[in-house]
Amino acid sequence: MLTFKAMGFSPNLLKAIEELGFLKPTPIQEEIIPLIFDTDSDITGLAQTGTGKTAAFGLPLIEQIDIHDKQTQVLILAPTRELCMQISKDFQNYSKYNDGLRVVPVYGGANIDTQIRALKKGAHIIAATPGRMLDLMKRKVAKIDQIQTLVLDEADEMLNMGFKDELDAIMEKSPGSKRTLLFSATMSKEVSRIAQKYLKDPVRITIGKQNSGAENIQHMYYQVHAQDRYLALKRIADINPNIYGIVFCRTRQETKDVADKLIKDAYNADALHGDLSQAQRDHVMKRFRERSLQMLVATDVAARGIDVQEISHVINYNLPDELEIYTHRSGRTGRADKSGIAISILNYREVSKVTQIEKMIGKRLQKLPLPSGEEICKKQLFNMIDRMENVEVDEAQIEPFMEAVNKKLSWLTKEQIIKRFVSLEFNRFLKYYRDAPDLNKKANSPVKVDAGRKDRKRKGSGKEDFQQIRSRRKPRGNYVRFFLNLGNKDGLIPKNVIGMINDNAQDRDINIGDIDIKDSFSFFEVEEKFAPVVHDAMRHGKFKGRKVKVELALENESKGKKKKAKGKKKR
Image (cartoon, rainbow, N blue to C red; front, side, top):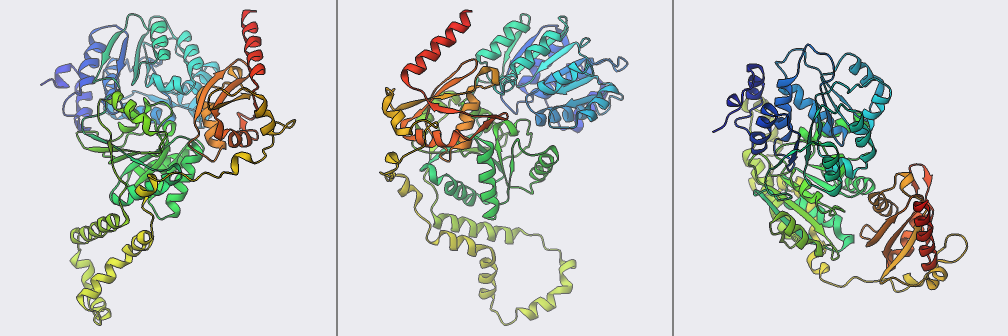
């Protein structure tokens, strides 16, 4: 069996490794560590979350740092501040006995003056988000002209989040003699472009089947009507009284709404999203790591960098817009040889994606009926009894009070005491589920449609009524095409369009068609029956402080603007 000692680490690093409880290298560590030690090759590593990737590049890079050289020698770029902080913390743990080694995390959303002071003291290793790093480079505070190694961690997510320009700028200002290590869970076209452009004949390491689901994770889903998602989430939480998990939502607003409802309904939950200050995020994460929270409701972006062991459940309140992210989410559970459960709450239109997910992860998703009120009450009752049976009784502490307690309860029989004890916590479940609907039966019944809704008058763009405009356009299948006054120059990407629709429209299950982003404007399509909702909701929205203008695109206008855009490109 290969050991860390056999890999050639110094006594100081071995001591830290032992204290961290690392028993043997993981597969990715077995592959990457010798490559960093024994070659000068650039490396592309494809691996899922939780494979030990940070230690795979971190341990050998720390070993190669020259403590006496105060210049920055290693730059690590990561998509989120949470991941930067986690990487920095891991590096500090690894280098616990390497006196004098300085690791500095820099990221947006925090005081830049504090980070400037830290960098001026010297940083052998910088862990940074691309935007803040580029800002500090322009201020001539962060200097990378002497770096020996550049690490791109979770490159796919950095590109998904729109950091392409920042990555290009940083890469171009870095020395050509450096070594580049690129790590990603997926090899998208953009990741491939970065690799081809900036890596020199990289050695490619793939750990496990790309996008595969861990063997010890069970994948399952429940099918409900869209409006019953929250009720389904409550039942999932109630049937799993010891749940310790993450609930993934698509948008910040949805994250807030779901968390607020859970808190109001007495669930032990809180939200993690981009609108929180760093102090608030740290407070939420501290509570979650300490298990003061049972459920953390988060967006994909906010959850990046969360490294918490023994998560029992990952719940997809909505499937991600890009199905590859499903593996990122589910990879939060089932770590360190522990079992885990990945649950998805799907409506009818999303069920068609199950086959795609199964093909992607190479495993079946089990369809389950939502638990009934009776099943939940039974589970909660026996969980309460188990807790009572296993509670530790401190005889010395409780003895002085027992005489008064016995006297107070002397008028009750043993059976009456037990009933009252159980009812203290149990009554709310009995009351809630007494008349609760059968969501499985409801899910198999047709949705009632407001017949008058589609005939209601909607305000247009200020010149004509919505219905009058729609009557003049040539329909494209079941979809309606909209014009949007934002484009590439505004930093708009398809993900932003989807986010704006979800944030502004109350219906979270709107079918979205083609998204066509031009230089200064865009077109997007939504299913015809949702067009009035989207039109009314989005015309009052904002994007990066700019007012959003949304109009129905007539067929000839759409073609004309396409021709105009093409003409501009030729010039």
